[in-house]
Length: 227
Image (tube, rainbow, N blue to C red; front, top):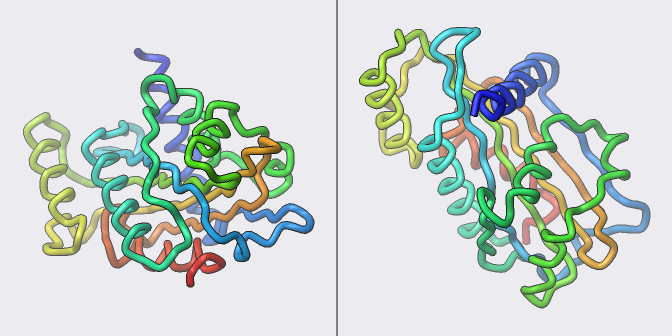
C-alpha cells in the first residue's frame, strides 16, 4: 500500500513540476494520419487523478475528487459535437488495471516518446469490441493545494464543497487555493496497437473541477474533433 501511495504522489509531483514550466504540453501526429477525418471513434471511459495537498510536501490522491473529475469529463465529452461513441466502460482497478497504468503514464511523456508507445492489447481489444478500429482516451491530472490544516473532518468538508462546485453552481472552494489541471488525449489504432495522435494541455490556473475551466481546456485539447 505504501508503494502504491508513493507511486500516485510521484505522478502528482510530476504534474506540479510540469505546470510550473509550461502552459502547453506534448503533441504528436503519426505521418499520414488525419484524425479529423475519422467518422467515429470509440470513446474509452475517461480517467482522472486529482491530488489534494494540505501542505507543499503532503498530498494524496482523493478518490471522490477523481470521481467528480471523471464525471465532469464524461459530461463535457458527451454534450459536445464530437464524433465519439457513448463512453465504453473500463475497469481500471480490475482487469483493466494495465490500461489504467498506461493512461497514467501520459503525464511523463514528451513528444519524442509518443511514436514509440505501444498500446496495451487489452485496450485495443476493448476498442475492437465496439466494432471500431480507432479509439480515443482522455485523461485528467490535477491538484488542489489548500492552506487548510489537515484533519479528516476538514478534508471531508473541503472535498464535499469542491465536488459540489463541479458544475459551477457554487464557488465554495477557497480563493487562495493553488490549483492546476492537465488534460491529455490519445487516439489509438487498434489494428496496429499504436498511438496515431496525442495532445495535451497543461495549466496552473485552471481548477480541475470547474466546468468553465475544464470546458475551455477541452475545447483546445479536442479542437481537431469539434464538428
